[in-house]
Length: 120
Image 1 (spheres, helix red, strand yellow):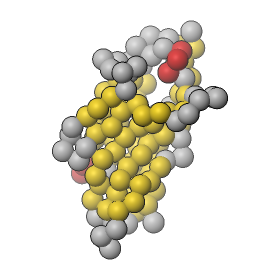
Image 2 (cartoon, one colour):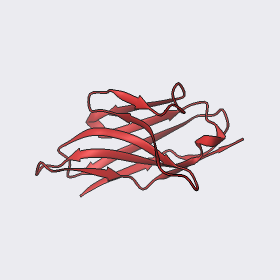
Image 3 (cartoon, helix red, strand yellow):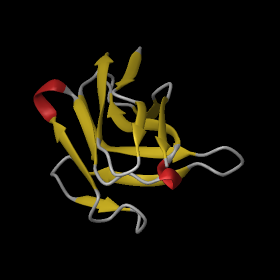
């Protein structure tokens, strides 16, 4: 069984910063790409940022220059540093990872989500 547990969400004023963390645990052999998605009320879930096992990153245009994704492979953890937050960044943020298990099966996993609210 694999779990992704997020932390770091909360309420922040516009222009402020937050750092999200997501730790994977359980029956893990290795982790391929990890990422962050978000879903605002009434909208579809969208990609925020993604990072490969080798460190290659890609970002949604709306967050480029403000958000930074990183990972610590030794800790099976991915981070999202969010700076210069705007009210439109308000959403539930979900961690995502493609995980190889010891039986050499790979599956996509999601965290439970963490609320980020930016007040203007």
